[in-house]
Image (tube, rainbow, N blue to C red):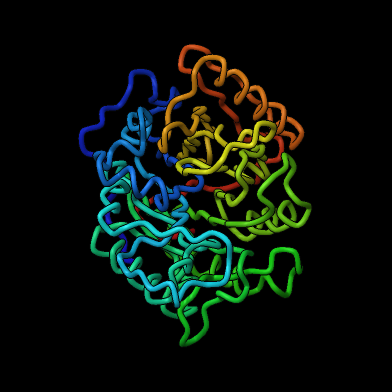
Amino acid sequence: MPSSDATTPAGATAPVGLTSAAGADLLAILFVGDVMLGRLVDEVLRDRPPVSAWGDTLPLFAAANLRIVNLECAVSDIEDPTAWPDKPFHFRSRERNVAALLAAGIDIVSVANNHALDAGEDALIRTLDVLDAAGIAHAGAGRTLDEARAPAIRSACGRSVGVVACTDNEPDWAAGPRRPGVFHVNVGAGDPEWDDLLDAVRRAREVVDLLVVSAHWGPNWGDTPLPAHIRLAHVLVDAGVDIVFGHSGHVVRGVESYRGRPILYCAGDFIDDYAVDPVERNDRSAVFVVDAGPGGIADVRIHPTVIRDFGAWMATRAERDQILGRLARLSARLGTGATTDAEHATLTLRPNQRDRRPQRPRWVGTGGE
């Protein structure tokens, strides 16, 4: 996708207190996990305005300079059950619901996941066309492998941000030279299987100021990142990735700072119609805002949310305390310290300064180092 400037959600206003104290030269990049607009969410959006899917979270989106999510469904009016893969769940949203993405000012979506082809190859291609027509950049799936592994690029505050997206789910959906599909990476296989991903990272690193890898990986449940995920995330940072944005699991996992770069191992679910596990609590999620400056990543601010009535809502005080306490504990296990801001109901994680690699400032104009 070509580069373009990010926009602010229509009708949303930034709340007081969300500007980072580190200064106006920071680029605030917002991340949320799985946004699933199919099934019952699709049905309720027939009678509700598109903005309703985001509940009362939109001020957070308005306060960010760039907004990146995982789109966990096809967005297509093509309805051909004979093209559906043999699997228990199929997530497809009608094309009119691209308006929900626009209502939140979404700039980039990952479409590398285990639901991108739920309605078949034609519906995947139609999804890409719908996103293109709406001006929403996408990464991780395409008409060919080259298209699937190409970065989505957007600019904000005069700085270019690229997203390379991949998944370890559904290997049969892997894109080929002339075959539509997703950018599939066998995360658990080790270095030889990572060559395509690392090559895509190197190519993207040459043309953007800040690079994100979006990875739809791992199991649905559990608190702890898999050893293979930790290893690959570290390899990606060593290769020049600034932010690793993980998702796929239904629950939020801890954040690690590795060499001054944040690794969001799993951002969890954000909008869906799923049954709630009373122990794992997959209805509890968060908005992650990464503040990046010329000298590197300044901090990661976490705003707790819940899924309620087919939308995303800011957590109540009791829910907030439980979500932030859990994330602080899980991040501490990964060596990342945190401070709680009671006034603004956030958890702030700061990169570990003692393991930060020396670096010269980026973002002099556009382009890589």
